[in-house]
Length: 282
Image (cartoon, rainbow, N blue to C red; front, side, top):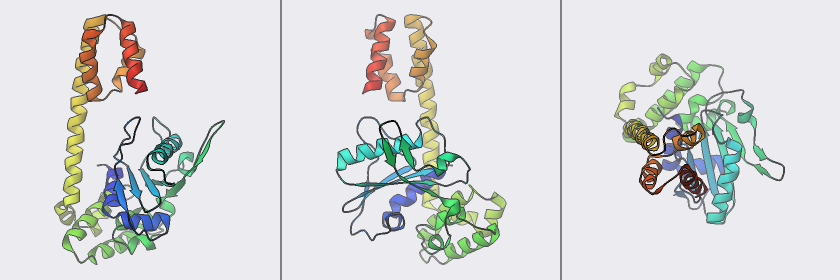
């Protein structure tokens, strides 16, 4: 289950509430922006771009701290691209969902020899639960907030969910709440307070399950394309250097298909390396 994706769904369904929380302003207008920017695709499963009348709010939800491209560098990269494309100031907030002592969760800047870029970090386990319990849009994050009594907090969360009058909204919020609570609490404890039946009726819950299934199918297709592409390489050039194999292994399905077609125009390993260089520079 993608915890990051639940948060993305909430931020895009309730953008005004998230803007009020993170910008501490009342936006006159707000728009959810696409997550595809120029140069190279940005993974869209854990981030949201919200544009108010004069600013972009970039929210990145994280359950883990380590990644292939460090979070701090990604924030610099996103900021430059957003400013270039939309030409407005950008406020960036990384929200760590699961408690950790990793220094990355306590780092609020990217720093190199010539550049310093700052962004905000929110650690959910340090947040006061009150503002989350009183706002249905933020309520699913409440179980992750600071508490000395897990049972008391979950009881308060369940009461807040029960007070939501609209049935569909109540189902959706309950579903997101139970999923995110799983980052912190045992399933049996969660089920004492939140009804599994209500969660499974939720359209958001069904959507998350469907996306998870689709993601699994896509991953299987990518593996099959990689296997086929490596076999073509072996047949075309014989044994190739492991460094080339590693470069091919990170390709998406569409890139692997393009490589398969391009192989028929290559006559040497040098042609292959040139093609890979061109793909990585685009």
